[in-house]
Image (cartoon, rainbow over all chains, first blue to last red; front, side):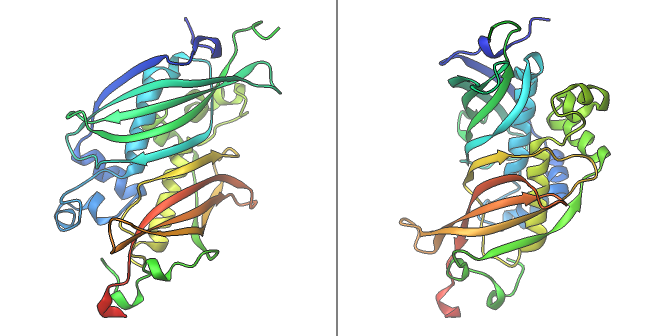
Amino acid sequence: MAKRYFEDFHVGQVIEMGPRTVSREEIIRFAEKFDPQPFHIDETAAKATMFGGLIASGWHTMSMCMRMMVDGFISESASLGSAGIDELRWLKPVRPGDSLSLTMEVTETLPSKSKPDRGTVKSSYRMRNQKGELVMTLKGTGMFSRRAGAAA
Amino acid sequence: MNAEPGRMQYFEDVEIGTGRETASRTLSKDEIIEFAREFDPQPFHLDEAAAKQSLYGGLIASGWHTASVMMRLLVDTFVGRTASIGSPGFDNLRWLKPVRPGDTIRARSVCIEKTPSKSRPDLGSVKFHTEVFNQRDEVVMSLTSIGLYLKRPAQHN
């Protein structure tokens, strides 16, 4: 299989992912497990809040984003995991029936100084709903293996 | 809001430097695999045999699973007792050590900054340095989280 290694990422590269639609049941099921606040689990209570209706937990939105990344490019890459996220912003609520699309743009590629077999790829992600509104942005880092022999 | 207003922690009540700790929770192998199957199906989160061959040497939880469990611990401990009305996001999230099946994690948040809103006189933003620890008191994850808090309503002064 043609895997994507560290060398296959370059600054300015864009990868489009999704769309993925989220249902009311998924929103409630995630929130009952991880974020049981009224506006995530109870439609009637949610109507009375500042959100005016049921919205997805931000951690659910991020978890769906992760799945889109895995399906979009990570599963076909030599991924070694991630050290973290530099910045994440939840900009607009995600509501039942919303269809989410994700755009990744590579912003930096850094070969590891201490470990010649890997490197870090920094990317900026923008998630939009079906109306084209930005619902979430994040700056992420991923670690990838280098092509065998590349560092020699 | 579910708690009585007099006991609610408003923007004014959050003190810089003061820490708050949650209860703890143990992650099972089944939970780790169930979360990963839905949201993060990478071999080291899903498949014990493949995980042994990876640089992690065994099954580890998705970092988003750890973050989501942290959220649940924070909700169980604080929501309904604070006038927090949501979060615009977080900065500098770091996964420092793997979380493995059977690990017991808990979170601790310390307020590091308070900023009254310029556009909304009824709101303020509060930054917390939040750390997630395992049962050996090792920090497995840390982040700077941001919360929007209501200010104390005038009639309660």
